[in-house]
Image 1 (cartoon, rainbow, N blue to C red):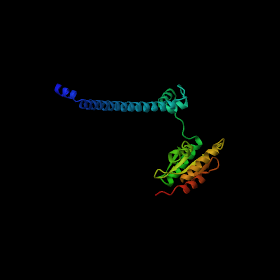
Image 2: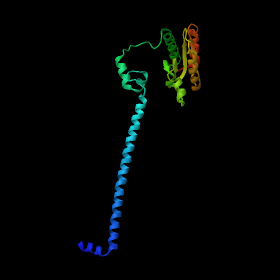
Image 3: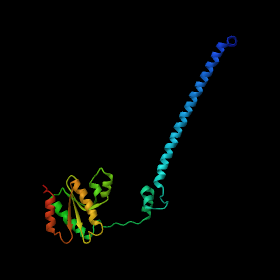
Image 4: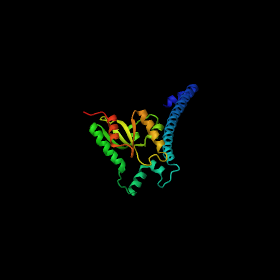
Length: 216
């Protein structure tokens, strides 16, 4: 080892080349290590940024929402919904009023007699039996309801019947009905009105015979 070192001392050029090679190797190793460290720091920074973005997005949903109960907070927080429901009192109530119930029973009897495969549904949300790719248009009818719905043997909605009681067309009722009518028309679902005090049992029977095919 010492002999090799003495030989290099007697040959300055060789010694310079060895030292230069060692320095180059040392610099390359240092750069490699530093590059790995930079990559690790970038990866760590990206992870922190992603986590921060998720947190900000979550917080953004709650921005401006009271810590106490509000409709906005309830919409964002299922736990708040559960808390409110647990604190409140609930009781059952009739799905139909007395006049609607009489029409429902009579209609159901006539439909089943005409075709046992068909069914009469009550207070059905339009969004449950009508679809639309336009989210905004669908939102206009999703929560609207029809009083009575005739469903065929394949569980497909075929005709909607609206019971027009006394004072039905008050406020914006007519406009709301127009929205439902147009959506049902485009979906190929019939729309018919049963008017309190005007539609007789015989007229209702003729309507059923017209809408419901005779069963086997």
